[in-house]
Amino acid sequence: MSGCWFYILRCADGNYYVGTSRLDDLQTGVSQHNQGTFGGYTAKRRPVTLVYPAHFWDITDAIAFERQVKGWSRAKKEALIRGDFGALPELSRRKAKRESPVS
Image (tube, helix red, strand yellow):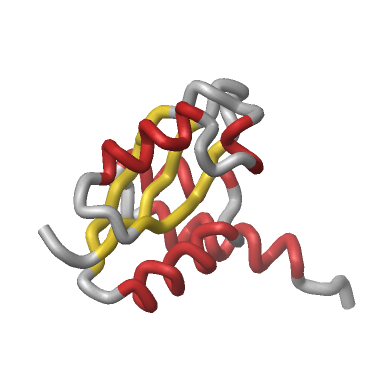
């Protein structure tokens, strides 16, 4: 399969790592994270488990989605992982209400 991947990993400490990959076989990328190949965030939080993959044909679309999801709350990421797409708009509204200034 050509194209690229957007993915979410659950780290050993329970945190989530959001990334993209151009590898055809995403399991190879997960294995590389578990080997500490990339260093950085996941290297200190191994083992990691793939909890959400999404295939994209264009890397720019995958990267745009990665940037969007990185800004999401934990609850919103978990709704995506569960496939609860109906909860995403409500979770966005909750965040917007918290961020709005008090008059």
